[in-house]
Length: 312
Image (cartoon, rainbow, N blue to C red):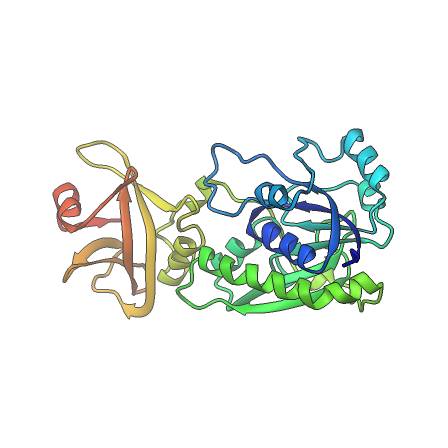
């Protein structure tokens, strides 16, 4: 079958691998894949775009700087019809965005214009949103600002972790791209300008941003725990005792709106389950705890802390 046209793809992560697969399924001639080297300090729990490109026989480059002249020269020589960016982590310059004949398109993991910027799924869960999704939009120099081409929504349930929501967004990304791709390949798409004043922009998150404040209520603490739960670095607080200061990681929680059993913030075990009473009078069920990276069961908790860990 004759290829639909020639594309260059900038991609990483699960969304990158799945959307690259979608282009190949539609017979797009992907002339080059630009991706990242895996960071040895990052938990690589996702699919490899480079591995998929290798299976498909597509040349792969991993530039430290995508704005370097060598990459631009290569794109100019390819003369692509389209450029696609699927979870590529670096901003592209105007010269690169100008190389495709029929335009550049980006797939973003939120319902734009909400949650423009970095790690949009984690931010949406942290803020207790009830839905998110995936948006395909035309690329401009300003990040996540170009006209909307296709969008698909997914629910965020009260006890979904960011990782679970990410799995939903991967499917939403496939569906958004599948819906728009025939029109893109024909050169016939409907575009809706984004009203950026109705949205929001967020930066990246660091492991230190998982620190819990026990001055917050149960829903807020639960949202932080599930927004950064594994495979992300996890929520934590520091506790002191005879062994000195140690890091207590709250790796999972379940929210039911239950009333607290006490009148102050604390962690304790009751009937074989671990709970956190919070300052707003509600409590959380804590489903996974670790102390300095070692999982903590009830016996180990009581041996280390006694009946409870109080927080002022």
